[in-house]
Image 1 (spheres, rainbow, N blue to C red):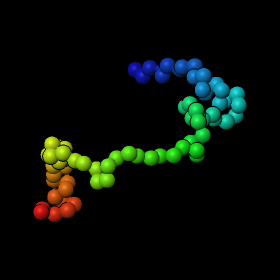
Image 2 (image 1 turned 60 degrees about the vertical axis):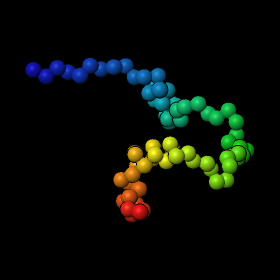
Image 3 (image 1 turned 135 degrees about the horizontal axis):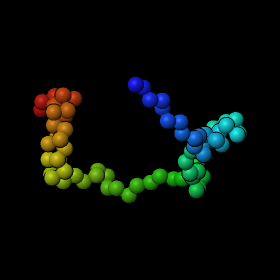
Image 4 (image 1 turned 180 degrees about the vertical axis):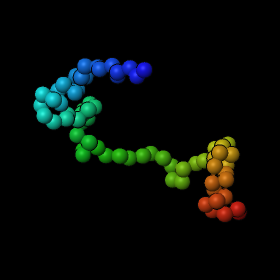
Length: 72
């Protein structure tokens, strides 16, 4: 025996879309105009990397590095 699917009432977004005839973008608009932003960094050049960090990358990505750069 197949039971009919339960019908749910339309969500608020679906009701608004039906009322307006078009979909509204979801999410919060940015508080500031992103075109005026400037991205800068204050990292050293070159960026210092510790031996422990190298060990972690080799442990997790060693096979990938060998495949990309060859077994050095």
